[in-house]
Structures are given as C-alpha cells and as structure tokens.
Image (tube, rainbow, N blue to C red; front, side, top):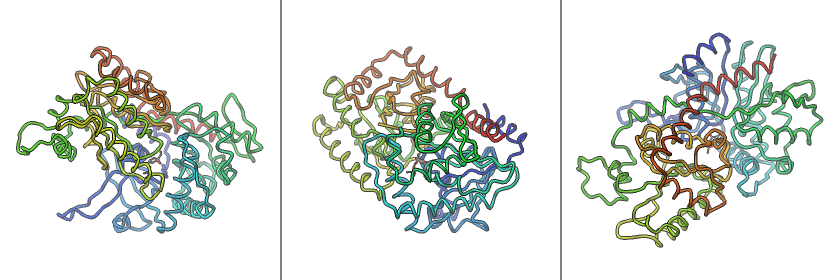
Length: 503
Ligand code: F6P
C-alpha cells in the first residue's frame, strides 16, 4: 500500500487524528551556524514508525519535549508545524520538570515497567514516588489530548510510558480511543507482582481497541485481566467486557516504510560520519584517496553488523560471547571477518544501563586481545546515534546482520536490514532471535535462540557460507512479505479494527 492510498482511506473516514507517544518524532537542537533550524530524528522505533503516519493523517502528534530548543520553537498551545514529504502535521509538546522526567521516564517507565515486561532477567524496581510522577506526566498528556478532542477524533495512544492516559481521557460520543502496546506483555505470573497493576489494567480497558505485535502477547493480556479483574471475555472476538465498557484486543505486527528505506539507499551519500570512523579503525592514513573507503572495507572483510540501542534486552553480551565462539570454532575467519557494533546510547542515567556498558567494554577488550593480529581486530564498537542515512550502507553491504535480543516487542532493524540487503546483487543474511517480535514476519532468516551461544555462532558461519542463490531466495521472500505488510497497511488495519470495535 502506498501512502496516498492510506490518505484517501483516512480522508473518507473524515477523522481528526490525534497521536500520542512519549517518543517525539523530531527533536530541535541548537541552530546551525547559518541560523537554520537543526532538527534531529531520534533513533527509537516508535518515533521513526509514527512520523510518516502523522504526515499522511495531518495529525496532531503529542510527544514529550526534550531540549531547550524544543521549548523555544513552539508557539501557542506548545505546537510546532512539521513539514514532511507526505504532508504536514502539528507536533504538540508536553514539557515536564527534570524531577518529573526522572521519576516518570528513568524510574517507572524504564526501571519498573520495562524490565517487568521484557524477559531479560533484570529485576524491576518498585518505588511509589516514581508512580506519583508517572501519573502526573500521564495527566499532562491526557490534558494535551483532551484540549484537541473534536466529535470525530481518533485518538491513538502509544506504548507503556502512557499506560494511564486512556483512563484520563474525555470520551464524547463518536470518539475512538485506540492504544498500541509496542513492548511485550508478560505472563500473568510476572505481571501480578506490579503494585499498580489494577490502575494500569483498568486504564487499558478504557480503550475501545488495544493491540500488540504478537498473538502470545494478546493471550498473556487476556489471561492477566481474567485473573485480576471481574471481566467477561468473548473468546471468539477477543472482546473484554468490564464495568460497562468493551475493549477489543488484537495482534497486529507493525510494518516499516519500505519505500523510505529504498529511497535512502538511492540517495545515501558515499561519505558519511561512519566513513570517517571506519577510516580510523582500518588505520587508513591517506584521507585524500578517491576510493570509497566503505566499499574497500566491505570488500576486504566479511562484515558482520549489529545496530542496537544500548539495552540489556538486546542480548549484546551474549552476542559478543557468540562472536568469540564463532572465531574459536572457525579460526579460518581470523583476520577475515569483523563485527561492527553500532550502539546508540540510551537511558544513560539508569544504573543497569551503565553496568551493561562497562560489561560490554570489558568483554570486547578480552575478545580483541585474544584474536588481534597485525592491524586487525575482530570487534569494533561505535557508540553513537546515527541517522538512517548514515547506517543504510552498512545494512546493504554487510554479509551478516545480527539481531539477537533476549526479548523485543518488534525490532525494526531486522526489517530495515532485509530491505536494504535485498537491493544488493549478492545480499547478506539475517541471524534473528526467535524472541524478537519480527521473527513472526521474517521466517526465512536464520532463526536462533540467543541464549544458545553455539547456535548463534554456527548461524554466523551458516550465513557466511550460504550460497548466493539461497540468500537471494530468502531475502527476496522476506522483502516481499515486508512490502505487502508495510506501515501503511498496519495503520489502516489498526484504524479499521478500532472503528469497528467502537461501533
Ligand atoms: O518500543 C519501546 C520504546 O521504548 C519506544 O517507546 C521508544 O520509541 C524506543 O523504545 C526507544 O526508547 P527510548 O528512546 O525511550 O530509550
């Protein structure tokens, strides 16, 4: 489906579209030297996914402002107009104090709910004071939405940071409230320990429609409400009846904007920030060389790539151990294969994230010492948030992409890699954790259990020796699947199902 088709579908429905997510799709930063605006698109999956939808729907997008500049550019009602190729929309920013942010974001969202919902064996932390500010920030979002509500409003709330918002919304007749939960929903045995479980469940049951990526997450949610609340569930339709309200629940794995990735591949500049970084680790002295450094680097090495936020759910330490195992089992690749890990710093104030960073550093030092040869190291890590323009060539040219989370709602990197690689004559291969949400769509990847170090190490080897024909077949079939279920199809299905649920 093309964006224009979604546009005409939405136009016919005459909806006033309101999106709300913690992740704002644009962050304003200090102006450029020439005085022009410096706008940055954050790396998080949710903002990347929602931006084109906001454009097509000419939505009001309510997100949390991050920077001083974010505040400076907004006009009345805290709004700034975002102009896009697919249409314009208003970004309405919610601003919170530093204390509120710390409790709501670093605290309750990312130290309580995040580890509770992801099975990565990181113990959730429970602090009452965090919840108080989480409620407060959810109220700010709800207020910002309520100010925008019109009789034909379609309100679409996103993710675990805003779980209380649905219960705080006005709901005049004709208005639809939908919510998408982007992270996993755990089993009842795990969720039941949350002190504020009833508030959150009751809020989610204030939605007309609630969706998750995967079927097992829907089943976990139904089981949770069945065990915690006096609900009646229609098993045929997944409708939950609770206190005179009806909520329909469905699994809808999110797609990507395939055309945007293809466009990026065509326009990607030969020289990017990454090129100069690669230049430093291949120790190239002649910077004036006309040859494309990246091409040379990819030609000389079997490049294995990983692109992640620095997060314990991403399975980064197990991945490094698997790379070590791969070299141990396949010494013929010493000096011939390199792992380039591009890691976006994330949630840096949280102790478990700081601990993980230190662990990774130590592990890399150990592995690099073990295998280093003259001027060659097996692992290069780059800690930086790159734009997709910057990393797209890495996806396209790499022999292997390792996406091995211990638990992940969806994982857009795996999908973007498939599209980028499908544009190569000899594509690469995806090694994908069975615990990434995207494993439901990308069934032709080399699917692994990230806890099984030998299996991951062997999959790297399998991918490297796989015949060109086999890679072409697998990557093409996955790319086709992604074309058929792109972000616009996903949006249309969400809107259709939510409107149906409201009737
Ligand atoms: O889907 C999980 C999520 O937290 C999104 O809400 C967000 O866009 C992304 O991951 C990145 O998270 P953050 O920028 O809050 O670290």
